[in-house]
Structures are given as structure tokens and as C-alpha cells.
Length: 352
Image 1 (tube, rainbow, N blue to C red):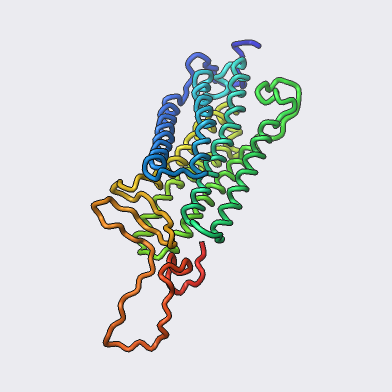
Image 2: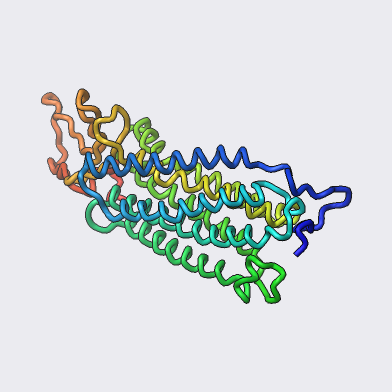
């Protein structure tokens, strides 16, 4: 293969630049550094809280820890692309001889991305069910289970599909190899749209429960903000979907699109451990740390030791006025009745 042949025929009047092409390596380095910091800071805070404060770990903690393996591999792949082709480099500024190695990294990174994001979403949904449904089975619990298993099956299918997108398989990273491939544009657009829909659904699930809690609107907003970290993933997913529109793909070289995918996908990972760590802080920190379902189906906000704990959701009852005769039947709901402790009076059976 000629080392001076561009990987894509340049537009008229443009000369290929193999030695120092315009690139976005600086932006990619900066973005990856932020994502790595958020991921490992969040994972460390989560581990510290579970090991030293709660002294108990659950299934979702191990699942979240498992996601670090493919994430590290994914980040290494992005840095490898920086060294070989650069990030945000037009395909006509890349030598044809470097395309197979770059496409092979993209091929591996696609599988690592699916493994990481699928594992993170599974850990988050497991955490939702433990936080909001400490006992029994509710419609919220079943919804989380359905979404979780649908995500698991989906990411397994997508990983296998991307691995066999060409026949023979080597044609994925050796485009000149004789063979056939299915339309990868449709695959990427469909994958991005379903990822975005999944992100929005996972973000919306806890808010439905939060806004049915028996607390003031101000407190509901405060608790909702803890879960609003997931908005970052939705924004990144929307950006990916717009970048992968057919018009965008036609205007950019395929190598540039793949590199943009790798860079933006890395930002999706930062919100998983960050969200779980922000939700599961040590109970002595002077901020909103942990909303936890207690044994009597109450939801308590743990404040610093110097402050009195604030009970967010308990059934309150004022003492009757001795000067007013109450003709209503004196049948009060149990203080610890799970059907009344989290929700406003008159709503009946709680809905998640």
C-alpha cells in the first residue's frame, strides 16, 4: 500500500496534509481528563462510603465497579487514535496505510462502549430499586426491572451485531478486503437514538417517585437536583444523534465521524459513578447526602451531627383543637403504613 495515498480522495483544490493536519487533540485531551477525573472520583467516593461508612456493599456496587474495566480499555483506545490519526482529522489527511489499525481500534472501542454503558445503566437501575423500593414489589420496581433487562439484552445484541457487521469479519478494519457489510450508518443512528431514549427513561424514573413524596416543593426540587446529573448523559446522547444524522455523515469523512463518536462517548461514562457517588455520600458531610428508605417506609435526610435530622416523609398529625368538636370517625392511618407514609393524603395507593 502506498504510504502517500490519502485514505479518502480530497475535495477539489485541497492538498492532503499527512504530517501536521488540523486536529482536535487538545480538546480531546481536556475532555478525557475531565471524564477520567469524574469517573474515578465518583467511584472512589462510592467505595469509601460503602466500605468505611455503611460497611456494606450491594450487587449494584459490584456491577458499577465491573464497568471500570472496559472503560479503561475504551480510554486507552481513544488515546491510541490520537497518536495514530489524531482526533477530528479529515480522512483525506490520513494515510491509507494507517486506516486498518485505526479502524480496528474503533471496532474494539465499539464493543467496550456497549459493555461499559450497559453495565453502568444496570448498576443505576439496581440502585433505583433498592433506594425507592426497600421492601415488596411495586410498579416502579417492575418498571426498573423491565428497563434493566431490556437494556442488558439490547447491549448484548448490539455488541454481537457490531462484531459481525461484515463478512468476512476482517473487512471491518480492512475496507479493501473482498466481502459484504450491512449499512453501518443505519446501525450508528439507530444505536444513538435508542441510547438517548434509554437515558431519558432512566432519568425520568426516579422523578416520578420524588414528586409524589410528602414534602414541600422546595425539598422535592432539591432531591430532584441530585438525580439531574443524568441530564448530562441525555445532552451528550442528543449531540451524538445530531452528529450521526445522514447529512452530517455525508459531509464528514467516516474516520472523522468515528473519532467524534469515541470522544463524545467517553463523556457519557462520567455521569454514572458521579451520580451514584453524589447520592451515596458519608452521612457526616454538610450537604444532601443520602435519601434512604427506612424500616418503616419513611424517607430521611441525614444532616451533620450538629444538626437535627430532618424527616422528609412521615405522616404528620396535629393535635385536635379542644374547643372544636370533631364529628368525623377517629380512624387514623397507621404512622408506618407504607400506603400513606410517602404520599399526600387522599392519593390512595401510592404509585411509583
